[in-house]
Each structure stands twice: as C-alpha cells, then as structure tokens.
Amino acid sequence: MRVLKLAPLAGVLVLSAALSACCLIPKAPPAPEPVPANSPFGALETLVGKTWRSVPVGEGEGGPADVSRWSRDLGGRVLVNRHMLEDGSYGGVTYVYENAQTGSLDYVYVTSGGFHTSGSFELGEDGSWTAEEEVTGHETITRVRSTGRITPDGQMAMTSEYFANGEWMPGRNVVYGPTTQALPELSGRSKK
Image (cartoon, rainbow, N blue to C red; front, top):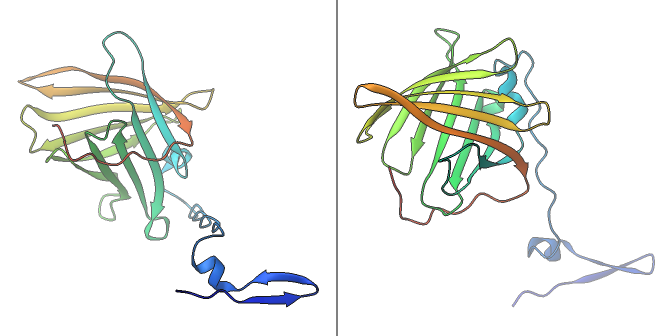
C-alpha cells in the first residue's frame, strides 16, 4: 500500500508528487511538435494534431465511419496517420515522408487486412493533394488513386478509385469533419 504524504504550505495542504504519480491528477497532453521550417508536407500539415471522422457522401456510400488521427514523428520529418473503422473491423497506419533521393512525398500504408500499399503524394497549387499507390497482398485491388482537400468550412473531402480486374472503378467518396472522438480499438476481426 502506497502512503501519500501531505505537506502544509502557507496553511494549505498540498499533495506530494506521489498523488500525481498515481494518476489522480490528469497530466497535460504533450505539446505538439512545431512545424519544421520548410516543411515539405504542404496542405497535409493542416491535418496534423486533429482527429477526423468520416461521413459518406452520395448513394451507396455506407458502412462504418472511419476515424483518423494525424500526427508528426521523427522531429517533424514524418507525418503519421492512424485510422480505424468505427466498428473496429479494420484499420491502418500511413507514414508520409520526403524521399531524400527524389524529393517526392512518398508514403507506405500498412493495414490490419494483411495488405500494404506504397505511393506518392502530389500537392496541388489549390491546396489539394492527390495520391496513387500500388497495393500488395490484396485479393483483387492492385492500385488506388485518391484526391483530398480541405473545404472552405474546414472539412476534409476525399474521393478514391480502385483498379481491380483490369479496370478502374469508383471507390469511396467521403467528407471528414474534426471530432474529439478517440480512435476505436481494433476488434480482431479484420477484412480486406
């Protein structure tokens, strides 16, 4: 059993460090990493430090919402996106970095579905970003193209296409809004 010591200070009792060590006093979240000078990430920087929740757009766009959290790592040299479907059935992590050899903005995406992708982002003059990626280990999809942008009302709009069975077909069309929701936990049942 841990004993907490109380120390008088100007007539007020102050709990010792033992109280905060046992987590009764919430700790402040760590300060966000500053945006590095000359960041190569362009409009993707606007996603960092926020959690986003998807809302399907258009007919046929259903299924569980996607919850996505963007952060920086390695001193701001890498952007990390962790996402999970709200029902916990699928998730993935994307690492975005500037390729030192080519100067391109490359990424790798690792999924709970047993496949992974790699590709490059192109940043548009209008603040949009496009990506095309090669898919490895998926049963039918071999490539994905997507476009994203921040809308005037602060949402993130995303559209995608999938290349499967020799042809491009529509993918998802969703809008993400900022949320305070925590990332869901992976449930163990994952789909490709």
